[in-house]
Image 1 (cartoon, rainbow, N blue to C red):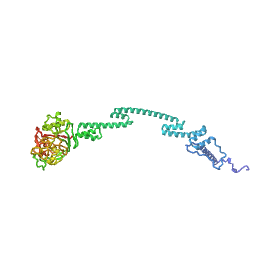
Image 2: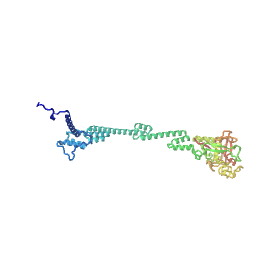
Image 3: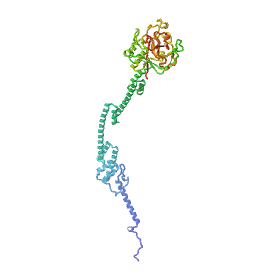
Image 4: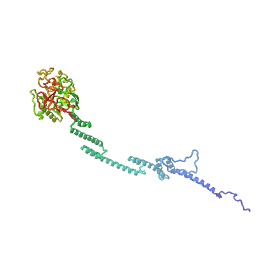
Amino acid sequence: MSDWQPPNNEFDVREERTPYGRYAIYAVLLGAVAIGGIWLASQVVVREPGDRAPIIDIAQGETPDPEAKPMGADEAAWVAALEKDTLEGYREYLAEFPDGKFAEKAQEQIDVYDNRDWATAEQRNTIVGYEDYLAAWEDGLHADKARERIAEMKAAQTAAERDAAERAAREKADWQTAAQANTIKSYQTYLGKHATGTNADTARSRIASMQASAADNAAWQAADAAGTADAYERYLSSFPQGAYVAQAIAAIERLRPSVGKVFSDCDACPSMTVLPGGNDTLGALDTDDTARSNEKPARPVNFSAPFAMSVREVSFADYDACVAAGGCSTRPSDKGWGRGLRPVINVSFADALAYASWLSAKTGFAYSLPSEAQWEYAARAGSNDIYPGGSTAALCAFANGASKETSVAWANTACTDPGVGRTLPGGTLSANKFGLRDMVGNVAEWTLDCNTLNLRDAPVDGSADARGSCGQRVVRGGSWFSGPDDLRYSARTMLRRGDKNDFTGFRVVRKISG
């Protein structure tokens, strides 16, 4: 019994192997390993540029771990590179330790900078951009690619410059061809090839100008072919700045001269003046005690348009030109009084018509004898008096009639006759308000109207009265042989169509073209 001992009366830790003890030991060992791994990883981890690596510092006053191993030169250089965290820092590390423990990590950091600069170069995508990359990375990851890009872009640039030069030369030649032809089609052909070319705006401008000119020419040709004042006015309305404005204005003035204008349609033509359109009361007035029955009743007459009338009675000079040209058949006698500007006498109604027809053929305008209404409207020139001037005494300034020097009973004793029993050269006496001379006196004047007993139902539009006895025609105005009664505005005398005498002549009117 003496060999027996109580169980577990002594404790030997080496022999105690409970599971809990072993777990505690393992935990301590694993913690130590983990702490060491974390420190080592902090020294070799790869960071983006700018991420500052933590550096283990010994706090002031602390005692270094006597068992810590001192860092080698490689590790110190790497720590310095991490602390700088710049391209130069990593390059300095590699330059010092090309085969160092951290060389691969340093190169990875350098490549980050390389790739970043390459991305910038690609984003710029210019020759200068790639050249900037090569200046910084002559042997960089993308150096070959950069050189390829530069070569490609320079080749493309050279090709583009050559292409531009060829295009410019071609455009220049095409422009010279277009300009030499100087037609709408040639400029359109040029634009078809060079819509945005150097001379494209000029080509379009010339086309527009030529098209306007072509339209101008066409409009002028149409107006000139029509030959009317209305046609020329349409041209002016459409082309107020046209090439033919001056010609159009001149043509209008020739066809439709303005009221009051004195003109001649040819060198041998009589002087004409334009009378305005308007309204007047024609025929004997109720205040005229000397009026005859065939001068009544007075009626209103409207002239819807202007018309022209010869300023003087047709002269011998005028009529002789017609005879010389073959338009008038006989050369009338001047009775020894002289020719020139004296009114032609010894002409029949037919002779007067022949002269008017000759003027029409010569000038292209419609000449004729006046109607009675036209004659009286022109003679009155707006006056409501019985005589020109308003009295027999005032009549002397306007009319070459029978004067006190004559022996006839109807003579106007208030007048002194400068001609005494003959005609005076046309225009010797005063003009009326329309600028017409010798409307009364000198010679009586043929009109187109047929002989009627009175003016009842006579035309009120200024046209001639074709009723009555047309073998006789109305003669107006009195003559050098007439007294005051026959020198009244409303006085009417009838002559046979074939009558010729030394006291009858005529004047002409001309239509103002539309």
